[in-house]
Image (cartoon, rainbow, N blue to C red; front, side, top):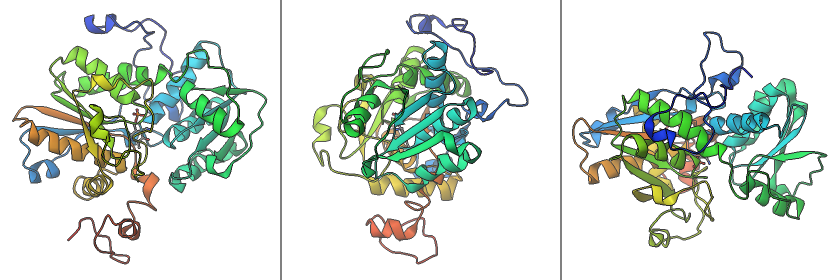
Length: 382
Ligand code: PMP
């Protein structure tokens, strides 16, 4: 494929030379892109101006806007990377079936990659997830509809496919026990992990951030799901900016934060922000890499997402609000002064949540807004 850079030709800095993994390097794009997958990565860094001013921040608040990826989220990066790494190692070839249980965004990225590269694709996702995430891969790939099967876990769907390739060990185990009813042997890359996930961020997302910030990042705030972003970006930034403060964000109800007692309040309770938090610790998440963890809650997260849309024109999802809320609080608490840079990752697009946090009625029903505007949009509580 046009976007696979040759192996082992990455020009490394001193710090990254220590990394034991294969370096694929950042791809070079032509003026005309060969296909939509080349519109994955190289996302813009945009200043969050009004919210920073209103909150009295002295530092710069900068958003790495991952909703500009072709499939609408940061997970496009890992979907493409997992497929291309599996192709490069000879484990898969076009015509095979790839299967991935996901909170939605990886599925959208994967559906896109499979449609373009010619794989069959099965995506499973929990019932909680927005119906937009279920519909989108169909819409995006409608000419290739027969290549995509969407299976909703809660429907107890039965799947029979001759040749299944699971892209991540963690998700293979979940899928095989919940759907197939019996465990499958671990994939070649080992249980509970796919190194392509953090590596996509270590090699690409982090390099982009460093380039966009001229190598100066004083604080990085990342909301964690699998933790691939936090681990990959965080590790590279710690190598290049040793004084960077890495802040992990984890919703109340999840158990990813450290120290453990932070997870006590509302432990394993449900929450509405999608794509972040887990009830187990994914192997690709290096929890100790974060200097500190902040617990987020639904209401503050969604309200901040609405402010990001209304005041900054950033059409992001709910986990972005969680990350920005935490960034504002932490930048204030640590008194990040003038000339300092705080970078926040905005992981996905509002497109996934038109019937959820973008809807005043939904916000009201969930108790996140005090009033319901009945058709007139309210961005803030009175
Ligand atoms: N936000 C959203 C909306 C996501 O879908 C995800 C991925 N689950 C994340 C944040 C977290 O990314 P990661 O899996 O790399 O921790």
